[in-house]
Image (cartoon, rainbow, N blue to C red; front, side, top):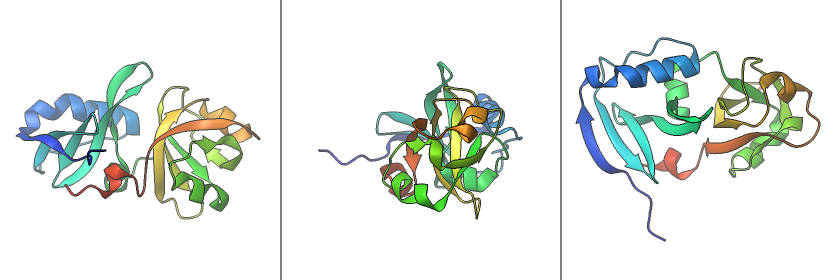
Length: 167
């Protein structure tokens, strides 16, 4: 298997990134401004990625039926969104760190505005630390009441190839 690496890296001007900032802002519920940073677009593992000041902060993925920019875990750490999250207990963390989908039973509280098919980031309920991100299978309300079954299809987690890549 060929090693996945960042390809087709090219610097871009801030004015070319306004749509990307809007996508990210809508997803996270906050204002995103990258005008002071060095911005590059690239590809990684068949996916478009956004590099800001040598950190991979966003990726393009299919959310609610359209291809949108969403934050990576480093992006979540950078911007600190207050939306689209689900908090899990300690029991779920080892599974998430191996790339497992997030089960509803491990989720204790979630943003009720999450829609099925929408972007969601998963955090530790005690520290608030981002652990993984993915696509919601059910809405935020249902996540909090589930006792069995998958709630989130995991796409990116701490320790995966995207996390470990040197930008």
